[in-house]
Picture 1 (spheres, rainbow, N blue to C red):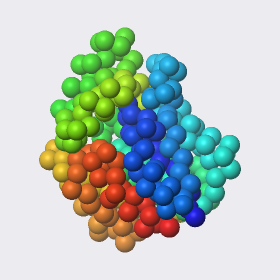
Picture 2: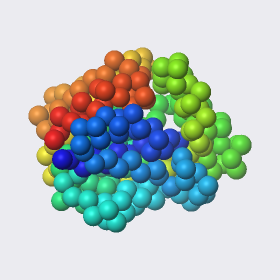
Picture 3: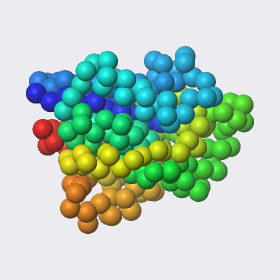
Picture 4: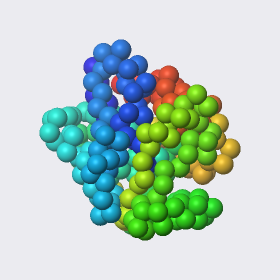
Length: 234
């Protein structure tokens, strides 16, 4: 039996992994899908000072309080940077890292510098409605999400603190001692900024790169593919 910790992307919540979690639990595995502070069912805690470090601590506390070891740690998009930070703090508790259509941050990076310029302008324009502190959730259509899930996705996503993207990622490099590293690239999103990441990792023997024909929200578009990649790490 394996233990999976699944970390969602910006504006979402643990709910985004429900389909994947059901498939993993059906195979007898333990699954934790924490919701980051200010998102999902924890959106009532939203405040401007929430930043990237807050979210790393959210997940670290799941490992601490649930006493989790030998974990398969998975992050989607922004969540990929979060799990990198978690693994950098607790590499001895992580068996494998799985990135779902995510950037791989370096020490000192901000997530904002990895956001394409056209998307930055679009997101910054939405801060006026939130006192300059938060950005609106990006609609599912932008990510080529399947049409059946559009309403559910837009109804559950919430504005995200801008500080989460501006806070530098601090890494010692300890996360790279985790030997099982996987990357899943969604090929069904024509404007994806993650293609270059996937192509670079294909040439690195320390990574195993997978692909999904769905859009960026792979947990909804292709839950079976995500589950298969996760199970391949056990």
